[in-house]
Image (cartoon, rainbow, N blue to C red; front, side, top):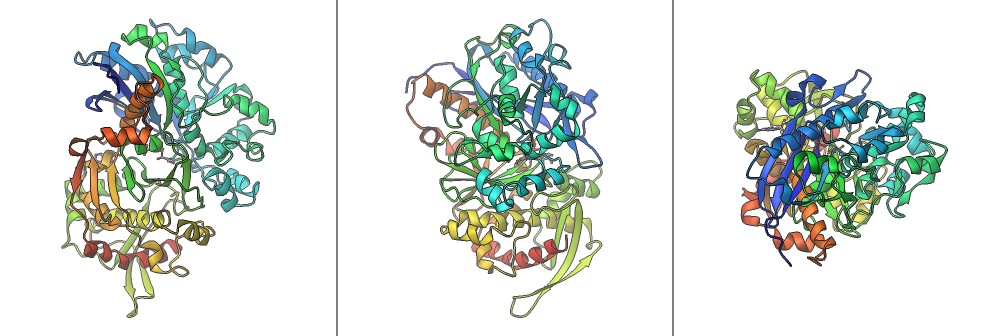
Length: 580
Ligand SMILES: Nc1ncnc2c1ncn2[C@@H]1O[C@H](COP(=O)(O)OP(=O)(O)O)[C@@H](O)[C@H]1O
Ligand SMILES: O=C(CO)[C@@H](O)[C@H](O)COP(=O)(O)O
């Protein structure tokens, strides 16, 4: 491989609560990290945890805030003298999945002519956008639209078969349908629609950029096997499907093809001293970028402890099911990303932390989570301050004590208002979140994956201990990798690891910004591949370059005994979910 000494690569992540940007060199060495926290750094938008949450379940983000954040992140990076932005050869990155940005006819025309003496927000907002806000992935307001999507193709299993997922509130198709029906004037004014990922790529490249194919799988509109939009599903949004295709910018950019969407907009090169030839490669969804941050092998699981908790793995099998999501892999041909996503991850844990300690200090929470003396073996609970995705239930809290029959086959639950102390809630929330991941990822780990998925495909809400033996839910992953904001918390990660029970090791990525890091790696590999400086495929490239000694921290291996301990709670969780 030819070297380009001094070259730098940027990876962005426009996630729920922050815009992050990482800088790496050609050896994958992390040189700098910058982050804009929306609530704190752009507090005039009055977001709470990056979003506006409405009573009817609508959750949205202000587009103008993102524009300000983009300028601010470059402004701050420019101040760091050890980073020469002029050496940046390529950028890529990721954004929260499913969110959509609505452009007026004028919007895309403004992009190439932005004046570096002004700022993004003042020149693009409001006339560039037909909607001031973008739907956020935590939105729960599209039940009717989801039903329509599933009915229009024969049900959840059929929709999952076509698009890789059953209908989900947050998916872009149902969200666009809601806007088209409930805000017809807005929809009529909409000339183009971006996913958050293609929005950021458009801003950076100074031209409207089509969707990236892997991220397009999060819409309930894209036929994964045919690699094209499904006309029948598109009609749920707009009967004029040609016009909808046009709004989406035509066919998505093939996921695995490393070709730049353009070079950096002159707005950024002039204003912040970047190289005008810097290549912009496609941006994707945050979870899709996360799997590019690690050399994952079959049966490895990646646990992303961001605002959401998501559990991810890579597979070459397309065996869709309503119980999980499959997306095209963003960089490896003929591969897919399996995913299970929970809304109630970090924010639900924070609520319990704050009940234990008004100073938002994690210490008391961690003490409870790490404690083996705190006896909660007969307790099970679900903590869903927001409506949950899996199981698909409205906002709810349930706590129960349980007993098992002598033969272990039956569980009797007794719902309770509270446990002995909030410390029990701390340990129970981490255990139940991890246990839900464990049982639901199990079919994706199976060697006889095809059979298992077929058997499970009707059970769209609950995993089901009545009809399937415990062994269906007790497959152990090979390695578990922990990433995201909460992965720096030893107590949470250690407890999660014990429940998941990886057989060959538990690891924490040294930088919690795995999505941005995956973006950096994609930018670097794409640039080298496109410039014919490497012929290695992405996975070969990463396997060769990944530095196990510095990029991940190896954690305690889970013992068989620790892992078996949690078999006892699986049946109880199944029973508890039936009460939701
Ligand atoms: N030390 C910590 N212990 C537990 N959780 C933490 C810790 N530090 C950060 N977090 C959690 O990480 C979350 C943010 O994760 P991050 O991956 O940065 O979010 P995003 O979804 O915006 O990408 C916060 O909501 C917080 O609950
Ligand atoms: O909706 C999903 C995945 O389907 C979420 O994972 C979002 O992509 C946001 O992620 P974070 O802000 O938690 O990183």
